[in-house]
Image (cartoon, rainbow, N blue to C red; front, side):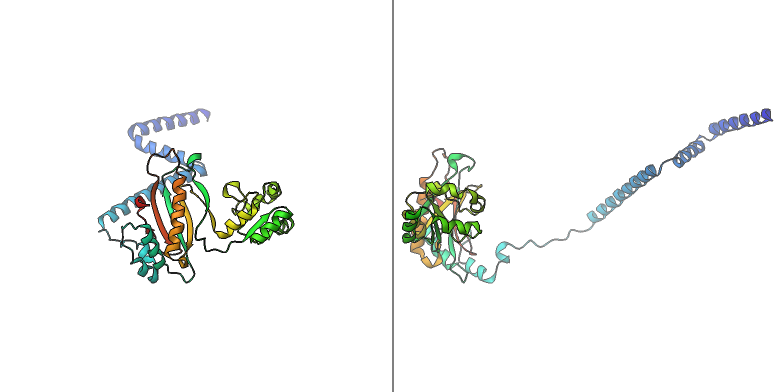
Length: 310
């Protein structure tokens, strides 16, 4: 029996060898199928995913060829900002000539005419300076009193001892005194637009720095809000003291009054602002200092100034 079985195995081996010699492709396919049958579920899934990916690529190429054969459809251009604006805005914008540079006086007169709001709009100046704010000497910053005021009702608070607080109150301060002010700050109540403090009282504002700092209300010697002469500081704040500083792109943004001021008062304020900016020109600036300037009102069109004549 054993001998007969061995002879059969030898016959099978010889038969397989002959088949491999005569039809190698059949043997190869048979081996591949057998090997595939032994693959894990993960390997089969990976193979299917790869095949699906190839099919998607083929479909994408066919779509791309199909789209290329189609005629291109012309899309209408997006409407400009002026076309998307209100009817009233478009009417006043028609008073301005496109590309024209205006002198300061004419620009302010046009700003008044092109104000579209029902409320008393603020007239703003935006001046692009050729400075690098990252450089300490080119970080332009200053405070000044506008000759005609700002037109805003400014609420002033003063942190000082008893005598200075009484003097500040007489000068027009809305809140004055240590106890009155700190009680409101403890409750998170801020009922002032400008905070003035004497140097000796500054330490007491330390715990309120996180509240006052982000709002720009923390007293600062550079802005004239840390001083021993509280009467003068209150008077200037009420009269229209403003502070300006270049932003990260080197532009000064500043309100110079209200539309109701009229062109004459606005011109006085604008000239005072320009004089202040010119006086703060860094000595390291050799190229153009004032690159461009614009005048506008709240929600009104922008008027470009002839900055070379300023």
